[in-house]
Length: 104
Image (cartoon, rainbow, N blue to C red; front, side):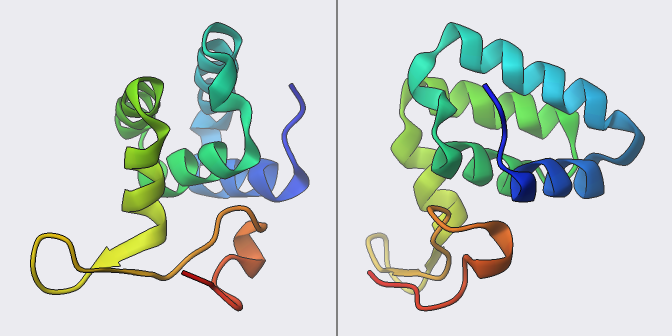
C-alpha cells in the first residue's frame, strides 16, 4: 500500500521522530485488515491519533471492529444531545482540503 502525499506529510509532521514507527504500525494493520486501507479511514485514524503512537494503535483497533466509529469521531463534532452531530471535516479529501465544502 502506498499512502497519498498528504497522509505521508501529516504522519511525518504529527509523529516526528516516531513517524517510521507510525508507518510500520499502519502498514501492519492494513496488511491484516484489508478494509482499513482506504484513504478516508487512514486519514481519520491519523487525525484522531494526533501524534501519539498509543492512540494510533487504539484507533486502529477501533476501526478494525467498525470503521464508522473513527469516521464519526474524526469528521463530526457533537452538538447538544446524544444524536446531534454536525459534519466538520470530510476525510475523503486531503488534509488541507478536508474542511472545505463539507456536505452532510
